[in-house]
Image 1 (spheres, helix red, strand yellow):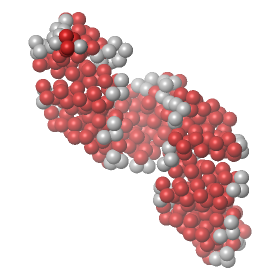
Image 2 (cartoon, rainbow, N blue to C red; image 1 turned 90 degrees about the vertical axis):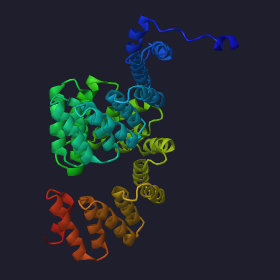
Image 3 (spheres, helix red, strand yellow; image 1 turned 180 degrees about the vertical axis):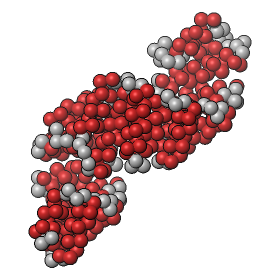
Length: 406
């Protein structure tokens, strides 16, 4: 061993430079050539910077983000004005969900090169990770100004619009992205997300446009796993439960520890009224991620269908403990209290649901029906009228008002 430690590092060869450059985007080649250049004291600083950059990309593509960050840092030490290294270290920090460090590095890259659109986009992604959607919009807009055909920038700006609830602007931006690049699977998937959220929030239109975009995205890139769970949920919302089960199962098959995949399939089984299977899947989802409040809510709904009201309430309690503003859990717990004959608690829960989502038509209707049951007719009428003002096509509030003589 002592003899081995005493052997000097091998000098880099001319072939190492080409192999090092190739290894950045081909992890199967390995980063040994880059390491030989880095360890060769006779190599120029410029060549060693290239080697650190390429080995950093090699580590990044291998998902070894800490070593990528370290290599980009070494490149920066040798070349402090290297905007590329700062922007790529920003990306590596972002991949570790260290949004603050990412923003700092991308800000430095932009300071060095204000026309570096890729740095603007990466900083926008980091701001998105911090839920600062206005800052993300500003950065992606600047990237678009620098390159009007930047499909990634249009898609990421569309994602920020989606989070702000500006669904039409989101769809317009992402449509521009897939027009620029008709084979952009991620773009079609994200437009599907915008269309999904629009239908979910506004309750207008159908689920088919989102499903069509998920179909196209999966056709273009079958390896984007999140598309299967997204399409599976959309199928369930469209009452196509038999199509949802295979999509959710595909997620579980590829990632057995994917909490969302089990939750997705549980919803589909519940739609097929196979509540035992649904509960088994929710159990799995919760065991993988005990902070999955949606899985608790869904399991509570399945227990309620089986008339296991106390079990349902316990799950709704847990969902609310995880997210104290979970208006769906408050609304569902309200219906469980009604089933137990405790209408006062039900009214309190419906009121909380409405407080957290003032446009929640179902909660107004549920509270209205409960007010009516306890003789609070005026308050019931007010709730049904409010539901009608939010959605004039809502059949429940319309029927209740008719029954009350309006």
